[in-house]
Length: 283
Ligand code: TYD
Image (cartoon, rainbow, N blue to C red; front, side, top):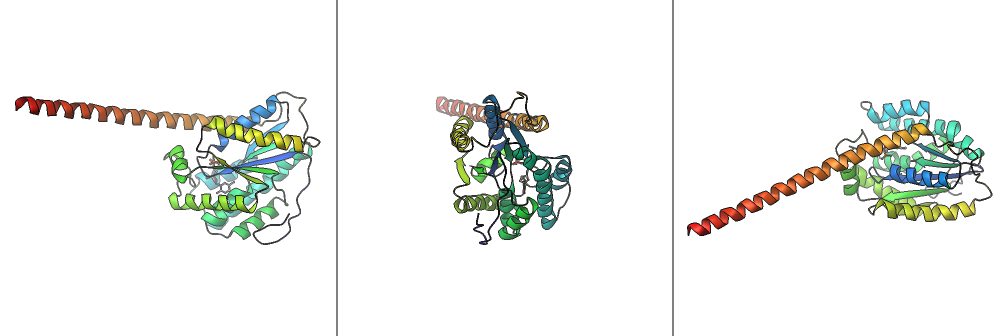
C-alpha cells in the first residue's frame, strides 16, 4: 500500500480478522454507532471486540487520563502519548483478536492522530502518519467510517462539558474536519464518509450495508463465536453506555432550556398583546 502523503510503501500487517475503525470530530456520534454495530454483529454470531483510543488497555487508560484530563501537555508529548497508547493497544488487544479471526471495532485509530496532532496541532501529517505506522508496526484498518458533522453540530452535541481536546475551539475543530475529509479523498477505498447529521437510525443503516459487503468479502477470514457473551469488552461497553447516558442528560437539559426559553417568549408575546389591547381600549 502506498502512503499518498509521502509515497512510501507501507507493508500491511497480515491477519485473519476484520479491522474497522470509526473516525470523526468530537460529537459526531461514533460511540453510539459503534455500539449499535457491535450489537448487531454479535446477534449475527460474530466474535466482536469493541474498543477505543485512547484507553483500550490498562496502560492506555493511564495515558488517556494524562492526555485528556491532566494539565498542560506539550503538543509533541501529546502525539507521542497517543502513539504509545496505540502501540500498546495493537500488541496487547487488537492484533491478538485479529489473529483469532475476530472483528475488531475501534473508536478512533491512526487517522485521529493525523487529523488532530498532524493537522490541527500543526505537527506535520507525514511525520504523524509515519510515527503511528511505526507504533503499530504497519497495522491499518480494513475499513474506516468517517462520521462527518459540521463543527457547529459537533460542538452543540458535546456541550460545554468537553475534555481538554473537545474544548480546543472552533478553528482547531475546523482543521480536524478538513483533514479528515482530505484523508477520505486520499484513501477512497478504505475511508467511507458518512453524513452523520442525519437521524442515528439512518446512519446505522448505511454503516450496516457496507459491513454486510465486507463480511461477504472477508467471509473466509472472519470467525463466528461459540460463546454468546463473547469478547465484546464489557468495560468498553460500560464506558460507552455511561457516555451515552451523559450525552442524553445533556441533550435533555438543552431541550428543557429551549422549552423554557420558548415558553418565556410566548408569555412575553401574550403580555405584549395584552398591553397593546389595553392601550387601544384606553384610546
Ligand atoms: P473521547 O472522549 O474518546 O472523544 P470521542 O468520543 O470524541 O472519541 O476523547 C478522545 C479525544 O482524543 C478526542 O477529542 C480526540 C482526541 N484524540 C487525538 O487528539 N489524537 C488521537 O490520536 C486520538 C486517538 C484521539
